[in-house]
Every structure is written in C-alpha cells, then in structure tokens.
Image (tube, rainbow, N blue to C red; front, top):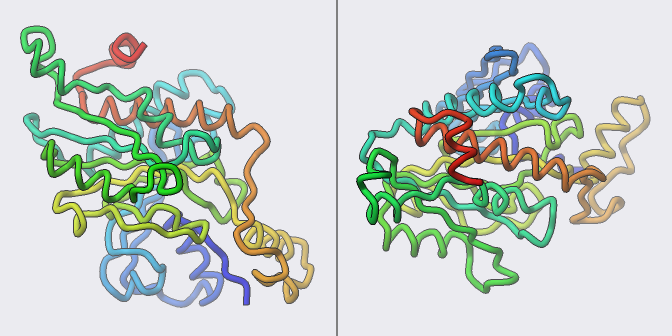
Length: 300
C-alpha cells in the first residue's frame, strides 16, 4: 500500500478530501483562502482531536503562503512577500515588546535541500548582545538569539536537545524553528512557506522523524516555519499516474524504493532566495518598526 507523504497541512486536507469525497464533511478542521497583497494565503485550523486524527497533524493553526511571485522575479515581490510573512508570523507569535525570541535553524548545511534553516539563521538579526552591551544604540530592539542546531549524524545530539539546553540557559519567551519540509506536489516545492503554531517533528516528512520541538517539550510557545524542498518519490509517481490515468496499483513504497526523494535541479538558488525571504519576514515580525532597508543594513 502506497503512503503519500507531506508536511503541509493544506496538502493533508487535500489528501483527506480525495479519499473521502468532496461532499463528506471534514469535522474538526476549518480552512480558508485569501489574497494578501497579491500573495495567496491558505490557513488550515485543526480544531480538535477528530480533525487531528483525520489530517495526521497536531491541533493548531497552519498558514501556507504561496511565493510564486518571488520566484518569477515580479516587481517588489521580495519586499511585499517579506511583509506578508511578517504579518502572518506576528499574528502567531503574539509578542510583547519586552519578550525575547530564539530563532533556531534546523537541518544540514552540507545538503542543499536541507539547508533552509541554517541559511535563514545567516540572515537573521541577532541583537541580544547588542541590546545588553550598547543599550544607547540598540536598546529599542527586541532581544533575539539564534543558532544552527546541526543534525544528529554530525553532532551526536538531537536538535530538540540542543534547543532545550539553550532555552534553559537563555530563557526566551518564544522559539521560532525553521526547517525544510516535504511536499506532496512538485508545484509547491520551493514555492510555499508554512507557518504553524504547533512546533515541529524534524524529518517526519521523509520518514526520518526525530524528537519533537514544541510547547510540550520546551515549555514555551514554538512557531515552526517550513519550506518544502523535496517530494517523496513514491508520492510523486502516484500523483503522476493518477493525473495521466495510468494504473497506480504497482506503485508501492517497496517497488519505488524506500527513502527516495526528488528535488529541483536549481535547488541551491531556490534555497538561497527563500531562506533570505524567510529571514526578512522573521526580522520584520520581531522588529516591526524597521524597514526592509534597515534590515539589509543590519545583516549585510
């Protein structure tokens, strides 16, 4: 039996409706679409245990922002897109001015499709030391700390344990984790950003689930920012078969090979562009008084 994999709540809802039928009511889930300054934004709220069981995701809010305008290099797409991400992220964070935030980049910098988290941290405004040591110049900024967690295979430590150790020491009020995700459809790979208030289980979309990073494990709210950079090969093959009318009976996980994923040939450029967009969205959400030019001056 083929298992279709996705980390995106919007795709999990699509899969449920395909299996259950358009007329069947999906209880415990509320979905809505809207256009924000030319960007398509879809929010899926999983309201209770019934909805969580149907979609296979924790209760919470999942917002997906389509960023095709950025990849098509449309005028002002980066500036507008960063603001859209910032506004959506601000709504999830619900921060007070005095609160401190930890930004954690998950993933492996040495593997391009898994480098969204580390690349995002590279353009994040880290301010805690400046606020502490030069309050006259930087006292108006929010305290922000950041780290790249690395991966278990190179550090020997779970990302969740690294973040827990830092939160115990620094005691931030919120954590933002940034990671690469797996999508169901190629059309969403490197073209969407998902924001969720449920935290994250790193590696779950490609069958390599690690320890959860969420409110339950850290004791503080965790916002997950994810970018799909790969598609599970079996999932892709099954969807192509369905779209062409071919039989998918032989397309089992075993037939296609477990653990194989597909990523675009220009993934390096895509990751660089999207990581910068995500970082600017985070910076503007944490420092709403700043402009894009202010952020560029700070991180350059």
